[in-house]
Amino acid sequence: MTNTCFSELGLAEPLVRALESARYSVPTPIQARAIPLLLAGRDVLGVAQTGTGKTAAFALPLLQHLSKTRAEGHPVRTRALILAPTRELAIQIADSLATYGRHLKLRHAVIVGGVAQGPQRKALARGVDILVATPGRLLDLMNQGQVALDAVSHLVLDEADRMLDMGFIRDVRRIISAVPGRRQSLLFSATMPGPVERLAREILTEPARIEVTPEAVTVDRVDQRVRRVRAEHKRALLVSMLADPALARVIVFTRTKHGANRVAAHLLKAGIVADALHGNKTQSARQRALARFRIGQARVLVATDIAARGIDVDDVTHVINFELPNVPESYVHRIGRTARAGAAGAAISLCDSSETEYLRDIERLIGRRLEVVNDPHPAPDVSERELRSRPATKRRPRRSRRRRRSAAAA
Ligand code: AMP
Image 1: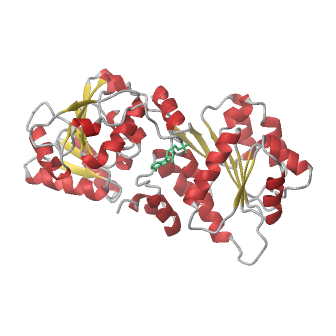
Image 2 (image 1 turned 30 degrees about the vertical axis):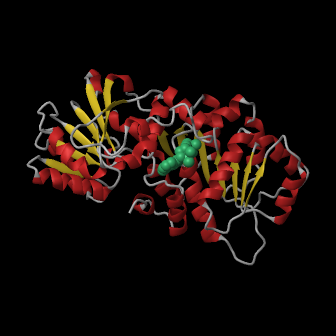
């Protein structure tokens, strides 16, 4: 159930299964937009920073293309080249490829400076499907005749603006000139200074431009609270909260489409006019629901993260996170639906014991603790102590720095 969103984007079963193990359930906005385009073979220009999920956005379609076109029994040739400005980023990308491609038989190698060339030469001689490289070392090995790029059909340039800052653009051009012109090309960059725009024009063919800028909302203008509650009491709590007429125009967020349907049906039964908005609804049903919400015919809109993208309704008084998002950036996007156009707004998150970790991630991203309201009714199933048992400063290693950066951006 949780992975329907990824499979709806057109990803094959082994990839969806790997994402499930990695506990990705909902695609991030850049993934939702880029994956279908990339699977269809388009070139893409992605204006996005680290922390948006851009790696999976390009890696998943890439793995899918390569696994479909791999000829069994033939020597493995390099068909994809991913260029990254730093060794750390290259290694991170390779880790992601290993995670997402765990059920596929594709080989990759990381070609970066600062380490011995021997093992890299050996890997190249054995044959790899995907090369993840920093420009300097790759050029070195190319000059030694160790690298064949003549079978490359997919090219990814990640963090192009940093390549520019680090003085790699000329090396990048040299490398790309060794790649066949018939290929799918992607360029990702957090910013688009002139030289990067020019490079993009040179290497991309009729690209789709996808921009994922950090939400402009000042998170600080939104009054944010957390209510601790048992999962099975959430619906009753939601209905009792909605007894307050101050909750005049409310978006309720769920993680899944089924969840959205269930909550909307429950509200209707309780006499509260609510519509569900999610990807399984037809375009016209979605537009109808939005229109009813906009003109106040429906007081509540129950939405999934993806369906809520781009919802632009003023005067949303409250955002209620019926379920906390498992991608913390989604929290910022969600609460950005309220407090628009200078208005005040409130966001209330219903947190059950299984969501404690999500709450941590959110607090880390926004860089502060959220006020937790103790709900006398119904009795919470998670103690304040449990909720606060791990300090927000204790970060999981791989995500930490990026999360902090995103927090600064938000
Ligand atoms: P990136 O922007 O590619 O560096 O990714 C940022 C972080 O988000 C990484 O730790 C990813 O593992 C994680 N991530 C990416 N996409 C998702 C998703 N759909 N669900 C959960 N986590 C994700």
